[in-house]
Amino acid sequence: MNKKKEQRIAANLAKMMAMLCVRNTQLEGLHGGRVPVSRTGDFSDVMVIDADGNEVPWTEVSHLDDPEIKDLMKQVVNRLYTFHLKADDPDFQRMVDRWAPVAGRWDEPEIDEFYKQKLHD
Image (tube, rainbow, N blue to C red; front, side, top):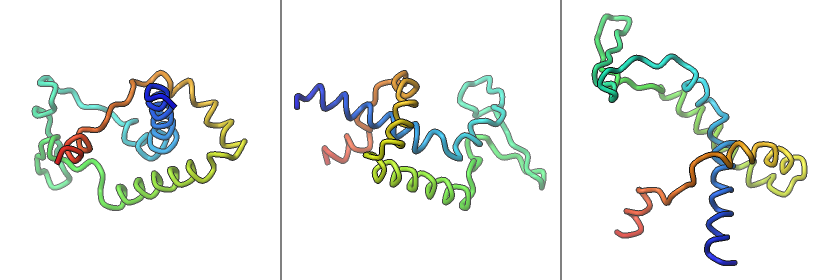
């Protein structure tokens, strides 16, 4: 298989896995909330006031507590596991095919910076 075809297949697979295994998870609950107004654009001008009256800069606020991140990661791992385990199942493939046009409109993936650095270390 030539390199271009291999990259296209990997890109399509990555986008489908992101769509089915990460995007449509508990992240949707975080994404669905209200976004505060930031005049600076980096949210350094946004404060959260907690129940004790403490002002916490938005950039320092934890947006997920430990149980939430644990539940999210468990859901993502289970979805990735299911994706790999059921890849040859015709019913699963039909679901993948239904979502393919949506994922196909996403930006093309690139090699992640973390791995670029690790590959050169």
